[in-house]
Image (cartoon, rainbow, N blue to C red):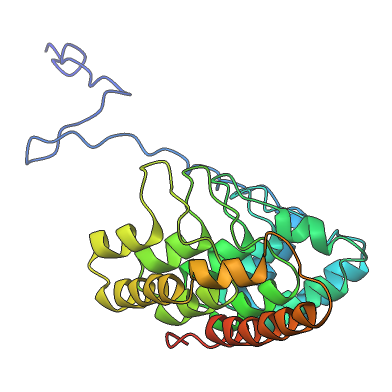
Length: 254
């Protein structure tokens, strides 16, 4: 009797089988190792803490020797700018106290786009921070890489209180950005009617308070007289000077 069992074909091992649906089940792979993020530096941590107003963390980092004008390695913005952006006056005060003579450098520090802390504060409408930075000596007419000042940015985003504050301290309203636009023209372009009206009124008050030719002739005479005529002339100069100072110091826009 012949045994046919030995002549039957053997099943091959190792060949992947097909499921009933006709789809092939891929071989199982080991899970990929989780990506390990680079640990942030202390400078980056300080900038992040300033943005989030984590004062205790800032105190610790500054006590460990991190410079108050350190920059975030990811964004390139200093800690002072990050605090001004978020509107944290306490964080600004803390950085100023730990500046150790670096306040001027902090105020002039810029990010990749050329923005200063004052420009950031005005852009986001943080009036308290804007006022504090101006009191500390920030350059009110500093501009970004595109030529936009703090007044340009506040006008662009309709931050009326910041615009009023910047006008009050004498920010240059005639300064133009790279597009050739003043802050007033930017406000009109963006549809910020309140800001535009404020800037128009400021320009009108300056024009109305400008010294007349008669005042100029009194203040700057060609030749000073002698004797009693000199005394009368000096009284006229004093009276006209007082009127001029009052007209300039009390514009109706404020």
